[in-house]
Image (cartoon, rainbow, N blue to C red):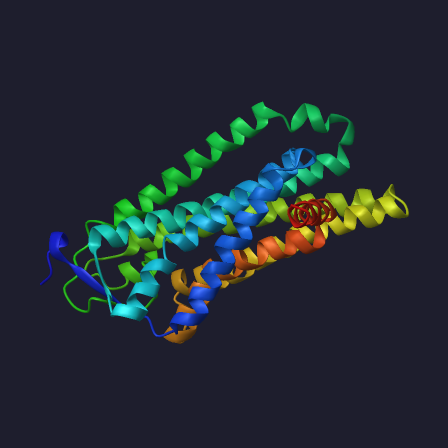
Length: 302
């Protein structure tokens, strides 16, 4: 039998070093560039772009908690992690992923207020509102994810110590336990309900109302601008929630998906949105694209 204090779990990493190294470079460089452009462009210091900046920060943190360890495993065959390290990685990954869900929810509400209640936008989307969102995010994500990890920590692992995943995913870890994991399964469903069910429902409702207002009131260029801006946000949200929903549902509802496919989906849930978000915003958002071009032109003349 393995004791909690000296348990080590072998992480099954079967993917290649180069694709993940390049993906991580793309994530860090792309999101850092996006942060730099927003920070150095005064016209982008608005609520919407503050949320884009927060999203970029999270998109750097989550892959950083996972990919460097994977790269070391590829190069030096370092496939072991302590239970404490595994639980820490689990908390960081799931906490900041849930924070990203809250940011996407807030972005949808920001567009809802901007389009459906434009006269009250500055009154609603102010510093006080952002403080409330920040506290709500800490309380909701912190409480749920701490409980998730706290329920996993006391479990006994007496058989296989091989996690069939590239990082310490909650269900991948607890499925190895000899004890009953009914509480862990229930907590996994709480995560799905709170961060997939509720958040997606509110986002869907917000964009239905936006679509109704735009089709009923806006015309010509204003209608196209609203569709373009909302379309950008929807693309980012679909990247995050689509892969995330498949991963969470397959893990927590025991849907029979091959281990390698499940592992691939879990990694894509972490890497893919973080890689494409800066590209989507850089290409589709006129203000960010123009600000980036100005910075490049200014640097070129130095």
